[in-house]
Image (tube, rainbow, N blue to C red; front, top):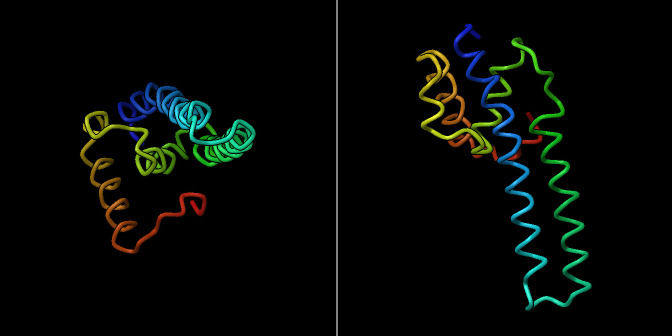
Length: 118
């Protein structure tokens, strides 16, 4: 990864982490506030959502070291999880953008949805 891509990735990584945490918390909040579900069931559902959220955080961030060597693969995972916006992606080099778009298109063509397999 070239220097300018590395700098942008380094700036976007914490933002992507925050976005994922917010996404998880919003899902938990919807469940907690859903009056159509019994209180105990809301608690159980919230616990399950938090466990799943922790697993998602691990797969999105925990398996990757903060290194230039792994940055491109990590960026791909963040894009696949829609934690990097298309506008933010345009800040990367043409080479990186093309590689990301190609990889995401391949996933779509082959019906790959299990991000934990990365």
